[in-house]
Each structure stands twice: as structure tokens, then as C-alpha cells.
Image (cartoon, rainbow, N blue to C red; front, side):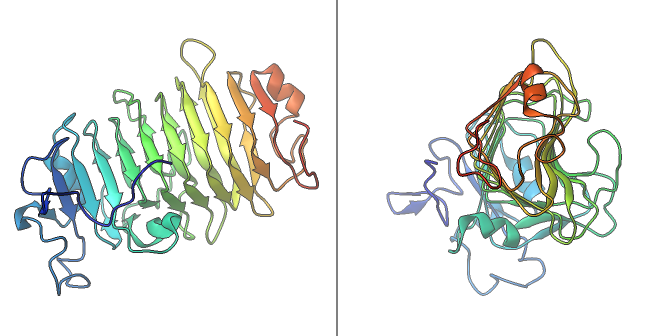
Length: 314
């Protein structure tokens, strides 16, 4: 991954790109701790223009302009939300403060967490192409049908389907709450889910990722799925052509009860390759069907590794 991790905004000629127009857009800052005086109140964070420091992520997103290349930097600290945060500005990049430690652990300390009363929706929806780096998503949605029950949702909700959403080193922990899925994707194309962590802390997630609708060109790579009944689960795959054009590779599925992909018998087009499964290959062990059946339905399995095998044959 080629991102240069930063603990703050870009510096140009000794100045901070924040309160002024910057090449590629403006920089905005979020510090959810300032209102509660819990953290970071004894110093000015990055010394930006105070008018551009927001106490909620939604306020910062609302201040962005689509297609300008704006960036949002979030100070360490979880934001408890009572309604869904809408990532609806094209081309923005959201990054959490890098304070050292394992980069994929950032989402444990900087996350969107559903309030105890917020049980009827995801903590975040994505309806425009954007990039999010290092943020956690923790939902309480008690929904039991369609894609409800997810901590975050790309597409769906009868909105225009976004394309080009990139989630990198984000975290989707269950934390013993009600969310059934970490991430749901419905009718969205050209999305990349990379180096993220999906974990059923306290109890298993039904699936780390739920996929449904007219989805195409979806790449899921180098993620870690822990204590998920399945890493991915399919709903109805629709739309023109043999979607979802799934490229599922380099993922690690760990935990005694964690399986690979539940296609629910759907046909499509995809490649499942170079993954590491903690289960033996075969029907009901790693997938919902035999590998031969998956391949008949359009999902080719190549070079995967299974429990008890040094190099898996399929």
C-alpha cells in the first residue's frame, strides 16, 4: 500500500494546509474530545484555524466540497453518534490521527460508535466515491432483513449507487453488540476493501461483509476476518452481466467457527485466490457448497490454503 501515513496535515513552506486553499483541496480537522474536555484540550491540535476544527465528523464532511480533493483528519477518540454519518462528498479522504502502534489498531481507538438508543441503522453510509483510512465502525442495528444489521453500508437505501469507495485499514468490531454484519455493500461498483479487520468481539458476526445487488468490480484484499460465521455472505446478485466480478484474495479467515464465503447458491463471476482459511476445504466447512459447485456457478478458486494443508489444491 502506497499511502504515506501522516499524524497531521501537509506542510508547505513551513505552513499548515488547513485554513487556506491548498493544492488538491482544503484540510479540515475533527476533535470529538474538545466538547467534553476529555483529551487534547491542553494544547492546540496541529495549530489550525480554529474555525476549521469540528467536534463531529459529519460537520467536517458537510464543510467539504465534492471533487475538490478535501481531506479530513480525525484526532484520537471515539465519536458516539445518534444518527448515521453520511459520506456523501465525492473525492474526500478521511484519515485518523496516527499516534503509533499497529496501524490496523487505530480503529479501536478512533471509531464511530452507535449510541445505546441508535439501533435502527448503520453508523455510516457511503453514497459517493471517497477514501477512509484507519477509522472504526461499530453499530447496534437490530435489523434482521435485507442488508440491515450492518455497522456501515455502501450504496443501498434507494440512493444513487456510489462507485470507487476505498476503505483501508478500517476496523469493524462487533463488541458484543447487535450488528450482524461489519460492512454491507449493495449495488455499488469499483470498490476496494483493503487491509481491514472484521471481528466478532463478544459474539460472532454473521458475516464480515454482506454483498447484494448489481455490484461489479469489487476487490476484497488482505483483510482479516476473526470470529465471523462467514467472511462474506451473498444476497441476491442482480444487474446486467455476470456480477459481482469479485476479486477476493490475500485474506485471512481465523477463529474456530470462521468460514470463507456463503454464496447462498448465487451465480456470478469472480476469483477466490491465495486466501488462508482456518477450515478444511469442502461443503459446509469453508464454503456453502463444494468448490466444484462454486466454479460451476462462476466463482473460480485458485491457490487457496486450507487447514491441514501446506498449499491448498483449489
